[in-house]
Length: 527
Ligand code: AMP
Image 1 (cartoon, rainbow, N blue to C red):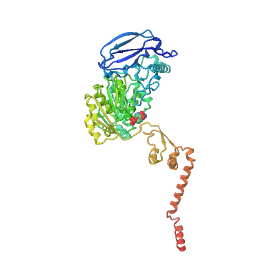
Image 2 (image 1 turned 90 degrees about the horizontal axis):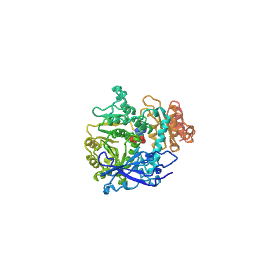
Image 3 (image 1 turned 90 degrees about the vertical axis):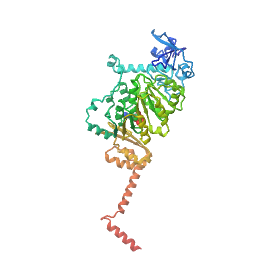
Image 4 (image 1 turned 180 degrees about the vertical axis):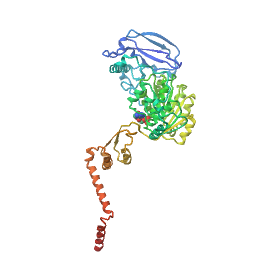
């Protein structure tokens, strides 16, 4: 493997709003550009974005020869001598993965090796830790593209994939438009979707009804999102239309994607950055949301994210914030600190989500949320999501939302339509009552479809073996021999039969009446 012997660091004002610039670091020696001669590394793959700082003053550009004989343009600017600028931008870009540290929770992770993803690949917008990993990453991307060309030669011969349309407007899909009003009402009722508001668009039934870009549809499938959950069915089209929303949805009901999809579509077509803000009460939630957002946005152009959360060093977050990020995912305290330092300009924000609003209020963040929103010019869409809607949320909603749509989903946890298989793991005997609720498995085979439910149990629930067998057997379900032959099950069955016999004996019936009288007489005469 060849390693870079030297690095030339040149910066250029890559500045569409006059506020920031991107530093590019290019290896000087053509030989150095081949990290691995046995593999055909793309030469221009070794241009990497490095640290950026705001307010660069001057720039110059010069042609730089690439090993392929092509000219790569390299620019330089003089950095502002400012304390704020003395963060990682002045450090040399790391050449090797092994010289990079591991990521702290919440920090970007290198897509190749899992270390701290300090840089953003300028070709794919993915996080990488070093020049080495960037080259590897681009090779992987190239190999993947070639594989897909081989498996789909028709596509390879055809025109390159059509670029994204310049804008997106949500329109009800003909399938949805053609449904009768009572069919829609019936569907909402079956799925437990309650809607209040003026002129609320109909729910979607399939993600395809949103006419998302192909990449996004592909990402949804890749993440296992086959059909929308009830909250997604109603919230996505309303969100895509730009309406303010107050949604009540339980954790686990798919609410994150319900707000992320409108956020992604909105940010995708906005040129000003940052264009979307998601406020959430805890760092852990922020990390989860960013992970999900990255999964959904993979392959979409210019969709960088930043996490602005407490408990982690500020400089790397600031550094990333200056990379023209679209989707900000923040906890209120940290974002407010950054706003106070004037390190972020929020005038491009077009959509704001306040996630877990009830937790946010319980944690005392109300004023901080309001203070943050004060810094955003008025014409943004607001989505307020909360598991419960206490009076305090109603008050917050009345302050933040204009003519909102209220969406409440009753059916929690699982997508309902089209669920063909459900797998349950039962091991806590304390949850006996819940167990039988689950064993009804009413969630599978909805809307007239057949479905399969597989329930795993182990000896932790041995107290329930006979109960389970008794209840499930009459439904024709297959019970495993391990359960049917279990000594626990037989003990429980015997005990129950003895108890039944005893109960039978205690009952007075026509058949045993004379026996009871005789027994009674006998004991009396003995006395
Ligand atoms: P949430 O309620 O947003 O925390 O989502 C709970 C889990 O459901 C997450 O792991 C999501 O990845 C997953 N999820 C969300 N929407 C869907 C969907 N339509 N189909 C399958 N899984 C989903």
